[in-house]
Image 1 (cartoon, rainbow, N blue to C red):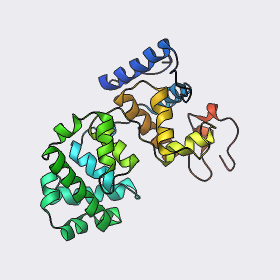
Image 2 (tube, one colour):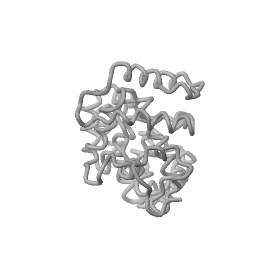
Image 3 (cartoon, rainbow, N blue to C red):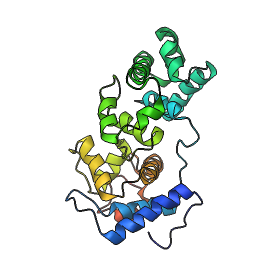
Image 4 (cartoon, rainbow, N blue to C red):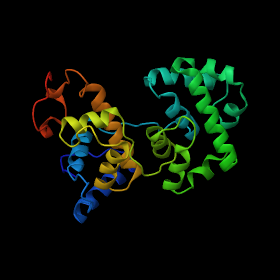
Length: 254
């Protein structure tokens, strides 16, 4: 880790940064798909923006509900739907399982695609009941690869949602890939747009220490960069912490 980096007060993030340091001393990952430069990307983003404090105050089940409701919408819309569920005292697996389908759809309407999302929430509640007797603690004790495969078989849970559940609710070491991640990699010449979700996820997991706290922080920093600098049109490259890594100017950038 660069000596100019101001370490945060959080013990969890200090542990993550220490893991990056140890990984560097041990040398880059052996996989040919690894990108050791991602260490430097993390350094630059963390030095510029600091710790992001993502999803740490919410219950695991609320995080899972949020991961489903945020699909194809802005987080502000998902939070309105979550607030409705909280007010109705339904932010529990049992509450979601027992509430009538039509009422659940009305409550999550602010998140868009509300009928489909109500079905997805019901499907997850059934999965949790049928496989783990309603216990999230038991579910998250399942090995990562096995649980990920199970989640991907649940109606409405794709790779990004499954990985968000694993990382943010279950503290499993998986990296979440979203549109911001792909955009940054492609603009920096680290991806070409044809990679699968699993391929992009593998780039991060093979290039960095296998630590959920680090994956959490890195993904949050990428989202911050995507929202404030790496826009799809006319990106604000001039003040972006990753500007030194750009191989060439981005068309329309400022």
